[in-house]
Amino acid sequence: MDIDTLRGLSACPLFKGLTDEEIMEAMHSVRYRVLTYKRGALFAVAGDECLHADIIISGEMTASMMSPSGRIITLNMHHSGNMLAPAFLFAADNHYPVTVEAVADTRVLRLMRTDMEALILSDSRIALNEIHILSNIVSFLTKKVSMLSMSVREKVESFFKEEQGRQQSRHLKIDLSRQALAEQFGIQKYSLQRCLREMQEAGEILIEGRIVHLLK
View (cartoon, one colour):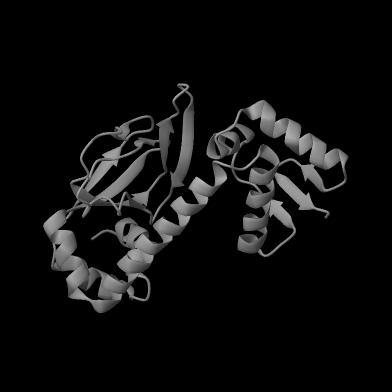
């Protein structure tokens, strides 16, 4: 196993609490391969079967879906260490609900379902980590569903509150572009910009590039 692959697995929540030596020992007991996707390549199209356990070793992928109006909505960004569609591998309906595309040259470690089962059963820590991963997915989707009934302002405020908790600061670094953020909210870019402008004019926030200062 090369150092980049090990580094990617070390960043994966599935192996939380395991040393590099323990990760290598666990992976030696299963079969896997590493695939490369060039920037712009499709990893999966909505409706495809999820037949493998896939972990991003390096690079970045985006998950998106089309709204009834034909607008593309970005649901999530996947980075090194992220698992792709872990909730669907063992599901009765194991079809991808989203389209996944590489937005940078990306390497993915892939296991067959039987090997993923063997990996989970090989160590109680890995099994518990898998439960945590699936629980976090349920929490994430619950928030997404809740956002559907929110106004634009409520979505923005909810995002800022979540980022404030995650970054432990009132000075938030927003890595997403305005377009990507709007797509994540499922709204038009101009609606997001208007909301941010109104909040800034009201003295609630101050925007300096990709830094948003929460004033109130």
